[in-house]
Length: 359
Image (cartoon, rainbow, N blue to C red; front, side, top):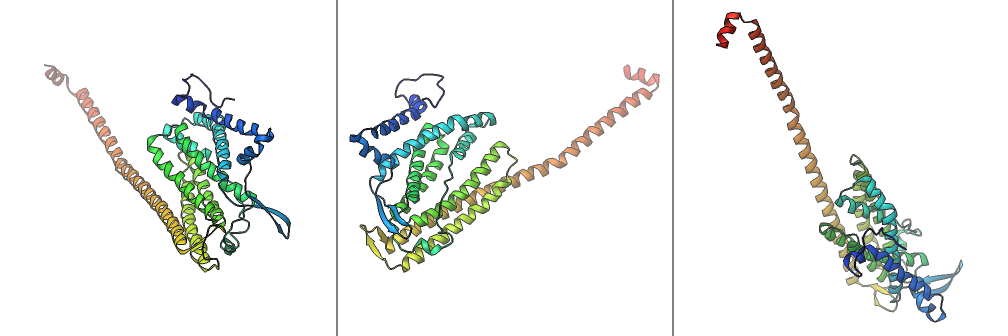
């Protein structure tokens, strides 16, 4: 099963060999885990990689409901879906993104950004009424027990952003882009891990929904811009959504963590119950979110100011170049009239004058 066209063979375990065949190597690991399901002796170990663990069955008015909590075995599940994400990335890259890149004739820098936009995945997020009822974000904390779709969402999110780290090597990202993408990836991993481990899954779901909605607008605008550079109005719409997302994120965090959890009855640190509702942890979480949002706004404002200066500079250059064009035409016209006048004067001169000029 080959994901890349092999125009040239490379030595085993060389850099080019690993980059060209990384999806095939990872696919062999996935097959090895799936084969383990076929044997009774290894089935229990193999299921750790595929199915989320730590399930608890409880009774509810709707009947029996299976809920999940987290533990160290989740690392095996994250590793499996980390492999799956790398394979899917290679398939989409080979059969979709590379073909579009060749048609658009993008430069290397735009090619990297286009791949980033194309690989961005928007997950369908079920908030279960959290947006309509904000008090549910902090009520009955700690939110230890999670529904299957919520836990699976967090595990796949961690797997997706972890896979983005080796992809910087596999995609041969330029050195100028590595620092920017590392900051981007690490911020996602930090915030998703904090929401999952501190049992702030409800707040994390809503904030991720808002963030991904804003990111979706940005990536759509950038894809349209790469196809035609005249499509710049969508960036203005994204700018509005970006600022709104920052304000909504800060508002929800102060409402849920700063006020809701501060007034909750479950105060204190209890690792067995999964309760992390202490003043120190709340202040650390709020400080982390505020610093992140402030840093994003600062970068956004700098980008907009630089863009505005470049636009004003282009307009100034155009205004200076506009009056110079008539002056050139006037000079050409005056030179033309002067030459015509000389020719007429020579043609209208007497034969004696022409003879004197020739001598």
